[in-house]
Length: 131
Image (cartoon, rainbow, N blue to C red; front, top):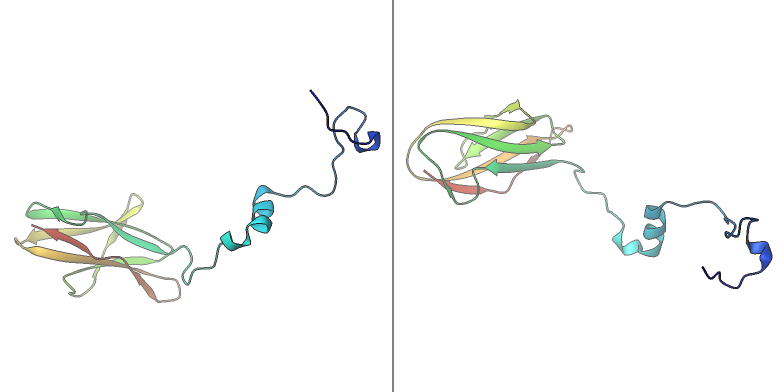
């Protein structure tokens, strides 16, 4: 192995360069080198709500359908079908669920919302489905 030409005082007795200064984390070095990529604080950090199923444009069967909603950063989740009143969803297995029963044939727009700790809501993108 070829060592760079440095004065002998720059090496510890074992042939390795001496450590200089305080060690910095990789994220600190990157943040200093690329300040334009630093994270900015979101209005509601960590709060998300997404209708996982049905998928947008999905054709579902009549009768019963369990709508699955992924949400975090909030205290409760509600679902609205075609802009009607918000209906509460039940938590189970790390998701929120709405048991949609007696579904007549037609096209529908679903939206979910999560209640944030400060009392505000964050709403999902609309998902369209058909029965």
